[in-house]
Structure formats: C-alpha cells, structure tokens
Amino acid sequence: MKKKLNSILKYSFLIIVSIISVFPLYWMVSSATNTSVDVIHGRLIPGLHLFENFKTLTANQPLLGTSFINSFRNATIQTFLSLLVCSLAGYGFEIYHDKKKDRLMAILMFSMMVPFAATMIPLFQMVSEMKLIGTTIGFILPAISTPVMIMLFRQSARSFPYEIIEASRVDGLNEIQIFFRMFIPTMRSTYASATIVIFMNAWNSYLWPKIIMVTSESQTMPMLVANLIQAYVVDYGMVMLGVTICTLPAVIIFFLLQKSFAEGITGAVK
Image (cartoon, rainbow, N blue to C red):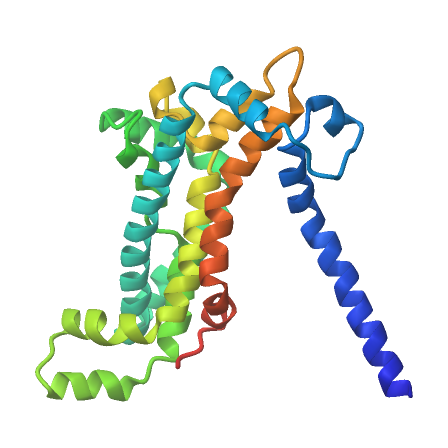
C-alpha cells in the first residue's frame, strides 16, 4: 500500500511539473490564434484569429520570409561547420594527447569565463576589416569553434575504443579516413546533441547579428521579433505569432534529435 502511494505521489509530481513546463509553449501557440485583447485578458483557449494575425504580421514585417531564410541559412551553415571543426579539435586533443595540448585546452576552458561583451568590439573590428559586415560569413565566423563543443567532443573521444584506431591503421586507413569512417559514425549521438545546442544557439542569436547585420534584407528572425514590440500600441496576437514562427525550427530540431541528446551529453558509445 505504501509503495503504491509513493508511486502515485511520484507520478502526480511528474505530471504537475510537466504541465508547468509545457504551459508557456501552449500559451504562446494559443495566443497566436487570439486577438490582442484576448491575450491581455489571459484567454487560454485557442481562437480563430490566426490568419488575421498572420496578415497583420506580414503587413508590418514584409521581410518575414527573408528573415526566416536568413536565420535558417545562417544556423544551418554554422551548425555544419562548427560540428566539423569542434569534432576535429576534440578528437585531436584526446587521440593525439600530450602535455602541450592539455595546456592549450586549459587556455580554451579559461576563455569560457570571458563574457561576449568583452570580445564584441575586437570581433567587430576584425569582421569590419575583413569586409564581412552584413554577410553570413561574418555571422558564423566567431562561433565556428567554441570551447564547450570542443570539450564535449573531447569527452566523447575518451570513450572511443583505441583498438578501432589501431585496427584501422593496420587495414591501411590514414588518420583522416579513420576520423570520417570510424569516429563520426560511432559518435552519432554526440553529433546529435551537439547539433541541437549549436543550431539553437545560432538560431536564437540576437546581439551579434544586431551588430553586424546592418540592412533590413540581412536581418534574422530574433531581430524581426524584437522589432514587433517597438510601437506605441502592441498587437500581442501578432507578436505571439511571430514568436511561434521563430520558435518552430528549434523545437522541430530538438524533437527530431531528442532521443540521442541525453546519450550524447554523457559521451556514451553504442
């Protein structure tokens, strides 16, 4: 009886926490279908004003499609390049391990303590001198390699069986072939978890694009959403629809790769 009661309490607690976690997402989607007055009054039931809100959104932000394409293109390219660079770095730090690489890794870890605001001006000067203002390369270049992702792949490389590397060398594979043919397929869960983190960070990035994307044609979705509330009278239904559209890609990526997320974070190898 006591065991059954504990089970009921445990599952009741988990259900309550789940509802609390999902409620903001539900309220966002529901508000996107209601009028501004309904949102202000706290209406929780979905309404019938989705198309009206979309018409208002496209009328106020005619570059909605362009901004969405910009964000998706920037996030996709950054994710691909960051996965390649950080996984190569993490693999190299662990497989070709020595004391000098440990010192370099310590410096990289120390750089995590430096806030972005401290490096923002030097980064802007570098990007400006390279004439990359308002370009995709200027957006992704500072974030291609991050200490967090290098550390993640280094931790995963520690669980990569060294016997596979030795056997591959005996079979005649060079180091690059070992990385692409053996390491990457084995670490699919790590790549999946890294993809979620990198894509969401790139998609939700606001401050750096705000600095270098100087034209309306190059603005991203977070910048567009921020522009929706810069008015004397805010249409909250329209704003919540914009937020919903901005949120969808990150949510889709997470649900597609969620099964591998926890496993990849722990560095497990199947």
